View 1: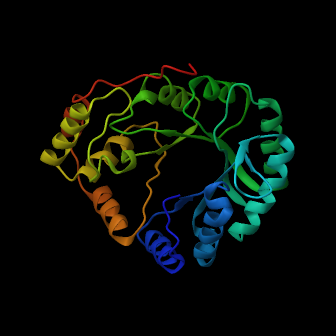
View 2: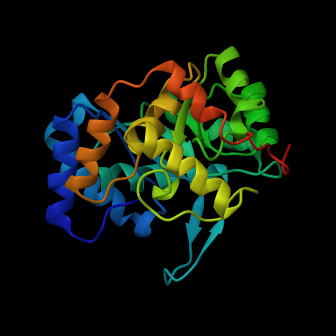
Length: 273
């Protein structure tokens, strides 16, 4: 979702990511009304079999394309997958994810739709993208999800309260999004967020900068947790890609990570528990 409208630049960026060892590319049909899937499909077609493609479903757009609604019906999921397959220029999706989810959704119908798509070979596995503990618990209980994508970073440690342990106990992968907290843990100015003050966030940023590359610290904090399968990081250009790869390849000691964890008290989920 971080890609710009520079088609040529995007293709170079995606290929460079692949050549750097990145093998999971995540998109969604909602991003730019499917345009994002088209760009990704075109960029990876030469090495499609060597990577994992993940996309998402659940939003229906109005006929004029000016708005959308959350409507994850069984019928919609079964039809939307064909549109995503076409845009991605592939005959299967490695990971098909529900793009959100509420406890009021027709969960049984949604699960039936995903299971049918696995049976048909259109998708290899399915998961949900959600930060709602009550929704996550319901899918763990009733479905065969392979993964949950959830926001997790040094600034957002809410999943540590319940969700990460639940995923590990049930052998369900976790795709951590927001690893760099929309750039706040990289190079953006501090803001108030999740109950933390401007000064709280600034303190964490300063601790990161004083100890290591901020990107290295943010990435390794997420990846050192044994419940995490992948850190999903948005990149807009080659410089950002280089920073992420350099951060990933940097050595960060467990002791330093422990110090970073002590800077802020972890927040907890207040809604959808």
